[in-house]
Amino acid sequence: MLRTRKPLPAQRISAKVQRAKDQSVAPGPEDEILNDDERKFLAWETRYPSPRAQGQIRRETYYTVAVVFASIAGLFIAWHGLLAAYASSGCVMCDPLTLRRYLYLAFSGLLGGALFALKYLYKVVARGYWNEDRALWRYTSPILSSGLALAIGALTDAGLFGFATNQSASGSSFVALGFIVGYFADSASRKMQEVAETLFGHPLKKPRKQ
Image (cartoon, rainbow, N blue to C red; front, top):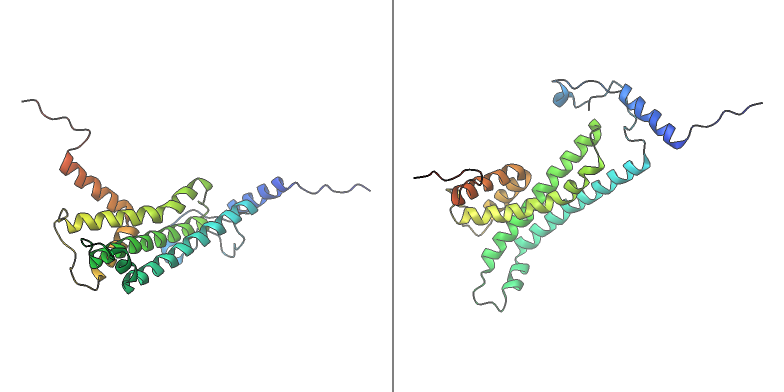
């Protein structure tokens, strides 16, 4: 009696990928309302049969959630004022309040960037667009958002955007500004490019000849 050969792991994964494609539907205008992830009714199995892909998705999720909690902890530390007071101790020119405001910007920008990365991660995973090449973006995006929030806060304080943040000791305006910049980091980056082009000129535009 002949035994049936079991399919190889690669063949099993390929079959599952094909089944995931068969269970998908074309995107429609109702996707944002129903949140069906472009799947057929009762199509519940994962679109990522590879253990390697599943492990990478879990690691990215753990990292992003950890950054969210770390940024919240950083905001609490900044609000407490101990870090600002310690860093400015022994420094005559250092202002603890100013340092605290910039800590608000950095940590709230980190929070906004991490929340955006987390939202992006679960959307692309659910809809089948997750890929390994985006891992670098997902790991570095919150850090980039934090740096942008810090820079935008400094530019705002300098009056280069035409408005200034509230100078109250609570720091709520700095937290709000940092979070918005971090969550919409791409838009903030474009705004900084506009400021740079205004100050230094557009790199592609040549000066007119007199």
